[in-house]
Image 1 (cartoon, rainbow, N blue to C red):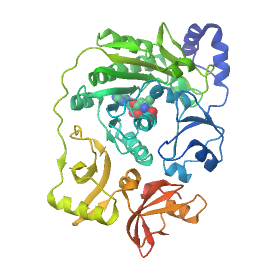
Image 2: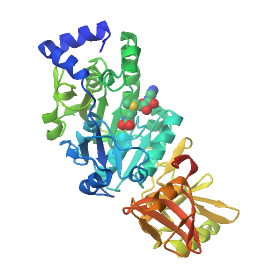
Image 3: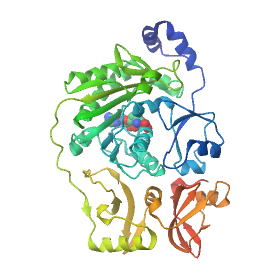
Image 4: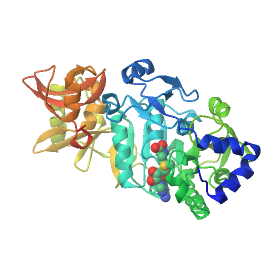
Length: 443
Ligand code: SAM
């Protein structure tokens, strides 16, 4: 691989005699890895179903190397049973104890690798705010949150300053996986080599600082901030950590032991961790964990969403009576035209909110119409389930958008493959009208 001269010179200075091993690693094929969704399938069942060999990544309990990459069209991918993710990208979340029951923010979240990993560790408890500034990418993030069946996330598309203004220092954990110069991705994405230049490193450094200024405002006293990049430039890595330490509000703490073992020390900063492709499988990565040591102003009094009107309550109640085991109506909120389910309500951003917990649906022409996310994220609340195997022809037919024969005579129900929810149907006479969104269907 032809490396940019200024980059090669800097890496030679950083790595010394390891530099040739680094260059040799860039010629090797990239690692394939995935995270299984612990709420859906065991890794053993997933490996058998996908016909792949899975070997533990080690530092991430749900992370596995795979000997080949399964297709994104595989029914179990539609079902959210796994998420393809570079093993080094799993380091960020694996570096820190993820609180269960608290408030967690993923500030630069699309397409959702860290968000879905955080959600797996949160086990449905607490609230996860997944924010992505770019609306197009935020929609992809929402798609992954929905696919993986995550019920306790807000997905927003705000500038970091708007996130800080809305929530204040409300978070126990803030993850900043910063937009960076991408030097660690040269092997995976050769285009990144062509785009590299020192000016871009400087630009990423200054943009990173602006993002960190906002991220730091979001961490409560005693809360943690995890900072990561997929680049090697010290300006975007150790110098960004130093920038936060210079605020006087944070101290740096160790990453979790497994991550320490799998990584090398940062440049002049032993608590920061670097992954080089010649030292571990996966692309280049940097991670550091900080803790807020100073008090923060009380978060702004959250503006909560509106509860349902009595007419809406009646409609949802009657839908629940016909189709669900139970639904706590006091956890259902109306925001704009849509109804959402979130048991622990928190501040509602006034704009650019893509979901507030589970998007249940909307009232149309006096009827409650359920949304795809309802079937995906609250599948266990539905009374009726049609259980399919991978081999059953109805699995492919359902993902194609066809009407299929289902196990219940009438009403709404969930279609599942190997027990993992794919989406919804509305049955009439055991014929399930397909509710799988058009944009997600297989050809
Ligand atoms: N955390 C993601 C994951 O694991 O899938 C990857 C995040 S990617 C490294 C960085 C993200 O930061 C991109 O989605 C990009 O759109 C976003 N970004 C770009 N400029 C930004 C800015 N000025 N403020 C906040 N986010 C920005």
